[in-house]
Length: 260
Image (cartoon, rainbow, N blue to C red):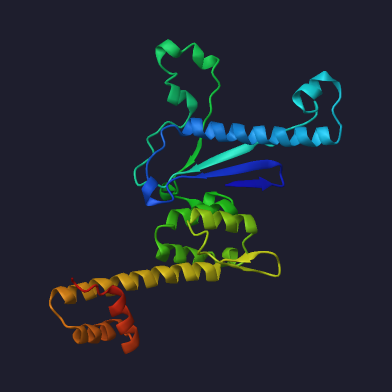
């Protein structure tokens, strides 16, 4: 995920472990991060070369060779690695560490081999969110509480002023970081900002409904195991979950799997 900035720098956010399938530490991350940064610079060079050649602005053999003018500059690229694993990160955080360049036999190389350090953030272990600027503070807060929809809801309520008029870049980042690109729907304000409050309320309610359905399924299974008949189970569902008869029957049909 890449964000351009009017202050002429580029931020890339590398989101690790957004799904349970990938909650592992990437031990080659310094190389991976370095590659992403290099590709971003290559892309910038290509864009400048294309523009300069289309406008016929290159002069002299050096400029024709590189495709850049002597006065051209690239935008700095910042790659931030978000790690969500339960275990504390124990991988290397720079290229020298990955190369083991501190070993005695490599001591001479340390002077000549450029180092690359990753910007690693473990949201789960952030203690003081207020030390960050507003946008980062809010994004890190969402990351910290993303696995608990109740805590995320409470966090949103305590920062309602911000979430009711969030800028589009931060909104897009939030969707990706919460793993809710398709389900998180927000309303655009006349001011141009985006109101995420209702979207996060809906996300929270989805979690409540999901938990409710899991409870109904588990209770039904218990009663079936105990030999309760259909009518008795429907009565229990109506009473315990305050369901109408029609709704209880729908849940019964949804979760009851007759034995062959």
